[in-house]
Length: 88
Length: 406
Image (cartoon, rainbow over all chains, first blue to last red; front, side):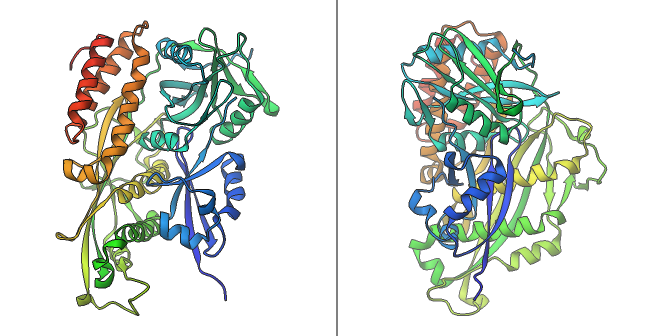
């Protein structure tokens, strides 16, 4: 049986203009599995990416391994995609 | 060196150098501004205060530090670059790690700038062709602040919640998330149907943005208007039930109607004055649905007795000539429940950063901006228990910076 679709909205706030990408995804897929694709769409290096909901909660590695349906029920459907901006 | 201009106040450069000199570890911050004629105009700098890692050879800012800062920024002005220090280095360079970050940031904002300082000297970099970092030329001048349009929404919704779910106090956060998810999906789906109004008159498709520009925050906003039929469709989706215990359809008499008054006001700074207002509809959507509405709903407070979902209002602080937005209630008790801690930490950070402006030669314009920001900060602190504490710090800073009380 096909699983339902959830749309997650990723927002990037670096630059003069905030940009968003709606991402329809199967509800049983892990969030981790879509990070490389969504990072690529915004031009970020996947290893530098951090995901946070709009209540200021940064998703942990354990969170990212949970299915999208659970994530959306716990954190909401809109997330900031943040470049960690590492310097050396 | 490639001749490519960047505009920034000399005072801000001196502050960056001072921050670098005051730390044995790498400092980090964001350059806030806009782009005009392909030239980055830096209006403000924002020092990072919370790190995941901070050593003499590396710095990783905490992700929330960037989220908090960027969420307060208006559309049109934002973080367009970074600065950091190499404390142990006598000569300046852009490391491989710095290059990789600049590549990533340039992918997000094409004219991104990276500043490196050792406290004495300072260099400016951008990503050039074939992903090669290049040093750029800088013009020390205080950029003008562009004008903006003011956008607002004022809509009421009733959310029908099953009795089982409403009585379950453990589910309050879950209720807020469910409401957020339904509303965001619904607003996104119907966005193209919404109109724009000013003074109760529809704005035509061909209206240019120039006709709506202002620099006065108190001016009548442009309202986002939901057509009646669309609102009915959206309202019909606002039904929540407890998936564990509620079966099937909830009868009207079985539930509670939760009242939600969505009020928001936000700014879009405009650089290209000849564009049509309709061109900004996407920017308005992203600001409202990708920033303001989810944030307000996450900070909302469910008042069971009055069946109200209270959401915070928008307050504006003049930050180096442009306005940043803060979510806050007018009521101290409500603030204590949600916004108090985060707003205190956020606003304290500014006060702490402003210490870097002490005992350096800052321009009268920057001085006036600092005085104005402290004035706005003092006003908003009245809504918080920590208001008196913050006021003492503000007055101390005023004395140290020799600022006028407005």
